[in-house]
Length: 181
Figure 1 (spheres, rainbow, N blue to C red):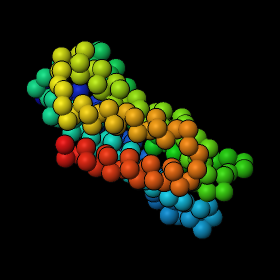
Figure 2 (cartoon, rainbow, N blue to C red):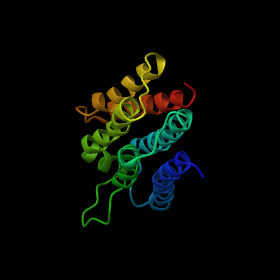
Figure 3 (tube, rainbow, N blue to C red):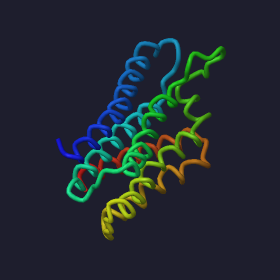
Figure 4 (cartoon, rainbow, N blue to C red):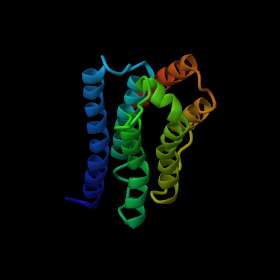
């Protein structure tokens, strides 16, 4: 097992936790759907987390020949993957005394923090590729990354359901496109 394999397994562990949290959250949504409304935003956000994790994994795989392994690289990996773990938990309400009327209400109440966390992986990824891996590319990948960073930032100020649904739907499409860029 080479150095990249160790780093990749660390990514896999952290991203696997995020994926597992989303899967458990979907199961809980289905189980509790008669007691608490689901809405549209939570499933869309779950898709963003799943597709975002896949994009991180693919990007790391595609740069495997240029990636070194160091303490800084491990911190960068944590900075890229842990926000997905955070969002995969924060998107579902805990056992509160007075829960929101729906999962969508919970998302709308906490959207700024959740969306801010979704900007962290591409920012840390871009910085780590440039500084740690000495990868400097300009073109479609960087344009996609710029839009990927801007998407959650543009959604933050809007609290309306329709805007959030449309924005998260566009975010899902963006992440889907990212899988094939």
